[in-house]
Image (cartoon, rainbow over all chains, first blue to last red; front, side, top):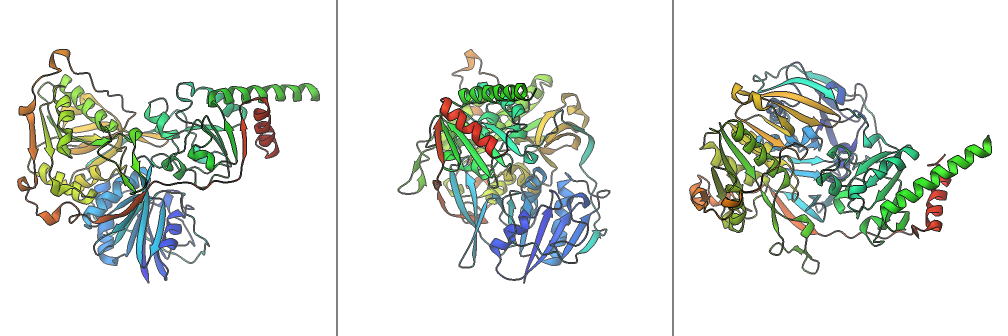
Length: 318
Length: 265
C-alpha cells in the first residue's frame, strides 16, 4: 500500500490531485489530505485522513512554519508521494519542503505515465514549446506540484474520513505578518466563466475590442501569455501553464497561436472557436470551428451582426 | 542596506529553435535575454539606491561565460558588483542542485534582502527562490507587486502581494527573499550615454566549483534529484472541423453556430 499526502489549497471538491494519484499508483493507496479547514472536505470524502492546520498557530503564507509542519508529519508517517497543487501558495511551499526533505521536485505536472514501474512526470518548458519527461532520483518521497483542474479521478468513492486537528505543532515566531487583505476592483474569476473570449498576439493593441464581444455573449475576457507579457492585461486573466486552467463551455481564441503551454490551460474546454490568420496554427487543430482571417476584423464583424440581429429581433417582437 | 539580485539569462523563447530530427533544443543559436521579472527586481533595487544612496547592489547569476557581456551591460547601471557562478561541472543541475550552489555562495555573505523574479520564461518552475530561502532559513514571498520604500530602514519590509483576486499586504522581517512579479511598476533605466563603453570588468567576479565547499557529486547531473528522460516538441492531432473565413458567409456560420449551441439567446 502506498501512502500519499496531498496538500489542499483549492476548493474542497477539487479532486485533481487524487486524479493524478490514480495515474501513478496501480496498487491500494492510503490518502491523507493536509490543509486549512476552508480548503478541506468536512465529512465523508475520498481521503482516509484529513489533517487540519490551526490557522491561529500557523498562517497560510508562513511557508517556513508550514514547511516544518509538513516535514515533521512526513517523518512520522513516511509518505511515498507528496503532492501540492500549483497554486500561488503551493508553488512557494513545495520547493521548501523538497529542500527540507532533500528530494527532487517537479513543477506543474500536466501528464503522468507509469513506465515499467518508473513514474514519468511530464511538464511543459520553454513557454510550452517543449514537453519534458522527468524522473525523480533518490529514495523519495516522490514530490511534484500539479496544476489544479488537469486531472480528474475516474471514479469517486467516498468513505468515512478521520479528520483531526494538528494541535501538537509548536510554530516558531512568524517572520511574515499579514497586515491587510483587500479585494481587487474586479473580482471575476475566468475559471468560473461559461464563455471566454480570449485574445493573443494577433489582437494585442486592439485588446479592448474583446470587451464588446464579451458583453454581447455574456462572457469574460481572458488572454494568452503574449498579451500578459506585453503588459496590456493582468496575469489574473492569463490562460495557460503559468496562468489558469479554465473549463468554459465555449472558448473563442482570437489571434492565439496555441503554444503547448497555452493549450495546457484548456484541458476541459468543450468547444473552441479559433480565429487566426494562419489556419494551421496549433490552436486550430483543437478547434471545432476555425475562422481564417484577422481576429480584430472578426470581432468587429461578429459584434455588429449580433447587435443587428438582436435589434431586428426586438423590432419583430414589438 | 545590501541587496542581492538573483538573475537569470534565458534563451529568448520567441526565438525558439528545435531540431526535430535529433529531438534537441538548438541552444547555441538562441538569443539570451535577461528574464523579464528578474529585470523588475533589479529595477526595484536601483530605486532603493536612489532613495538610500548608501545601498549596495550585487547581481548573482549562474550560467555560461557567454552571458558576461550581458552582465557588464547591467553593471553600467550603477550596480556595485556582479558575481557569475560558472563551471562546466554545474551543467545539468536541477533546481535542487542549483539552489544549493547559489545558497552556498550566499551563506558566506552578509545581505539584507534578496530580490528576484517570480517566474522565468524558460523553465518556469519558480522553485529556486523558495529553495534558496529554505537553504538559508529565510522568509520568502512571491508575486510581490510593490515594496513600500518608507519601510526599508525599519528592519521589516512592508509589501503587497498579488494573490489572485486579492491584494495582501505583509510585513516581513529582513533578511528575506522576495520574488517580484511583472506587474510591479519598476522598470530598468537605460545606460547613460557616457557609460555605454565603460570598463566594468573589475566589478565582475567569477566563481567556479573550486570556490565552493561542494564536491563534484553535489552539483550538475550527479547532484540533482531529478532527471530529464526526454524532451520533445509536441505535435497535435487534427480533428474534423468547420473551416470558414471572415467574409459574410463565415461570420454567418459562426453566428448560426453560437445560436444553435445556445451561446446566443
